[in-house]
Image (tube, rainbow, N blue to C red; front, side, top):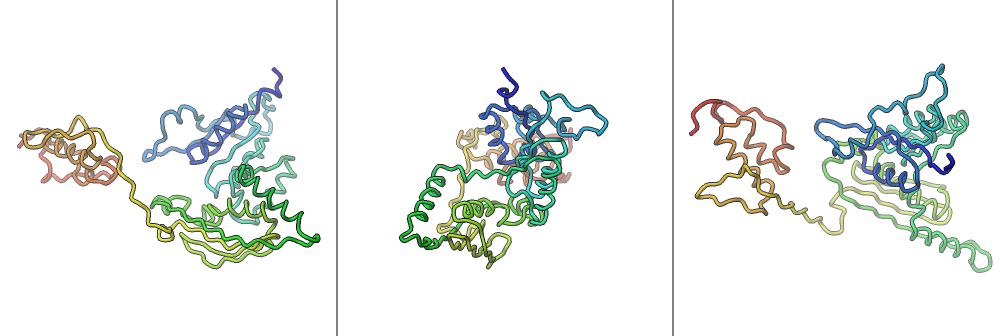
Length: 332
């Protein structure tokens, strides 16, 4: 088999993110190889074991070679770098890919500040490589058919006159939990805000369908809501982006707690029957807390056991001597 038919070597930056599995699947489905990946794990948010086994931490393939070093063999060289890191790191990771002689494929947005695009264009000419971004909505079958229909309407306008500009209203409301505000996505310095983090996909789609923009206005700019006006070559767009649940047409329904199997530590007595298999997580943890409290285990706290998402998610708290008996003391 020739080298051209063996596929290309890919490296992936940001394997712990939401979109990274889609990149991995695309690399595999196109007959290419993922030879290196980076992942950031913490003690509080460990990744699944199957993902840790598939990731090469601090792989040498992502390190720029010394100037005096001999060129790497073609078989082991990284040819493409798939960038799935947070928005504020896209610029730096694109530069890293170019320095190691690879072609970057970066998620949107390429940069947060528009003036950084000029520097990336200079690097493209310096390294002789292109910088690609992911335009997933442009290949959706329904949107491809919509674009073809819009082009047909423009060419079939009566008397050769230009077709009337479309009036488009874009309203996108999606709820986000409290995690959104404390993560990098909730920081405007690191994500660029709603327009850059979420709206960039819709703005790319609108300009692909209706032509380039000649006017842009922002009427509302808040942490969880943005709105404005966009004038395109063939359409006028009024848009609203929101992650506030108050903007939903109907109030969201609370998610049901999944059933939780009874723990072997569940308290059993003549007055309290055995916990049923459909007992909730909070009730099971309370039973476990009562059991361990009787056994004199100061490592488990009642406040932690009553945490809505389980005891292991609550911050550790030291029990006072007055609450739990000392080790070795007689049990009540």
